[in-house]
Length: 424
Image 1 (tube, rainbow, N blue to C red):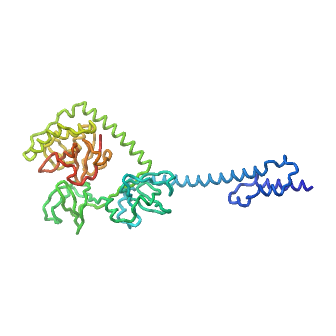
Image 2: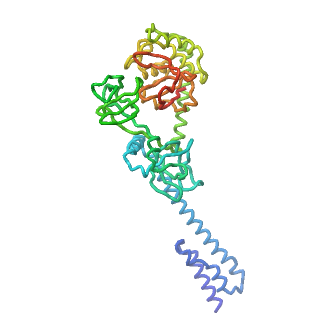
Image 3: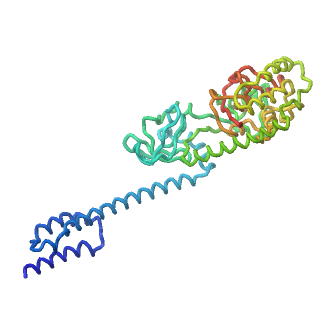
């Protein structure tokens, strides 16, 4: 009788464990069940009850593992959702967000203070998944904090970065990280020597060009162009500040793949151009003006001692030097009859099968970026409102201005360099 009652009790407990729907919120109610079984059941026949407490313990362990996996799955799903939302941000939306940055309170903005890059992670610890990178002077918006980590958003990149690698709410750091531009919204923008419509015109800039702003006052901005620094009315430009932002792992992979494809395509085009004799001097100089004679004489030694680097880049540099002494012409693209700065670079590269935009600011996005310490012959050097071709030894060849025409300058950094782009 007692034995039957004890067996029934054991079955009842067994039913609670094995036939009920497991809910980890009830785990505390089940804690110690195996102990109760051992204390309450007098095992007269150990073979009948052998392993019961072990089964219960196994069940509880299994249920706990299921619960842990469920929590991990929810976290992973949330992480994937956030990544998907970030990927759905278009380049236009990212650019629009970057343009709005300087209108916000700087207290929620940070600048990466690294020599190269810092990883942005999915959680606030160094063991979590890498979502992307913040490079030197990249700007990000802080959307949360967790201990010594900031949750940030920069372009399409969203995640956590250690507070040790960013500067927060620093106006000077933000100013240093950004570049202020004036985008031309008129057919031809006149750059004047002083901030007055009566002042002398020192240069012209075409529509849609971005020129760097040096100063702002009373409806005028001071800008930098090839002819020097001058003033333009804000009635004919749109002002904006550009910041660089982080890069997701997916963006980095896509960029590296694109760069490699472009490099291989450019190499093939260049080899074909060389095979067709483009660098054999088929398009020599026209008669140069007296103002270009000194540049022309210097080009002989320059092209003869073509710089080291890629053979194709050296070929581009040598080819470009053949036109030194020819005239500068506003809006022109002729290497012999006249070209402006971007028209000159565009036409030189066109001879090698490469299509480039007729815009110095647009050329800041062609090819792939390299540092000034890595420059080699054939690289495109972009300035505010101007562009040139690097020929090595610190020198450039470019369509300078009406006075000098196409010439060689002995110092590439005679003015601030905005970007160096490599095609080959």
